[in-house]
Length: 184
Image (cartoon, rainbow, N blue to C red):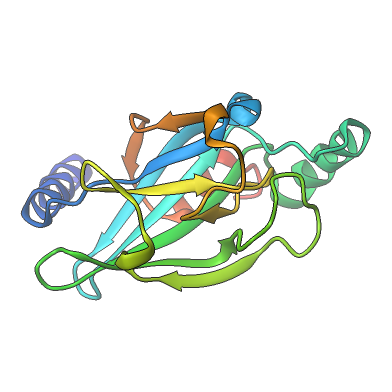
């Protein structure tokens, strides 16, 4: 029964993605942080409120100072039960499936440089007129070492890594926490 429900849910999700022609984001990150690349992207489409939750799981996040990073990894392991970094944002759609906004609650980089360490967790809702699209997919910049997002790069794009093909799984932020954290 569980398998049947999973298959039905996946078919419905694929149908919704096809109906709305939802293009998942293309991510851009500095090559210097590519060792902390994307492990998996979880997506959860709510047809009721026309939101697509995007949860990005990164291999790790490295504090800019190596000595502090070692201690930071220990802290994160015990606080969150994981080393992987998990960040979520939302893509809002209209009834025709067109993007009307990107919502970055607590994960917006604002004007922070990559190695900044204070007050990094901003929030923003951005309209399509400020978003760059690559083949119909929103381009999201990973602008800080702790993987805060933006639509304008905080790093030299001559040294960027574009990530357009990554593992995608149906699921929520909570699902990612259960999968990657020993706390859940």
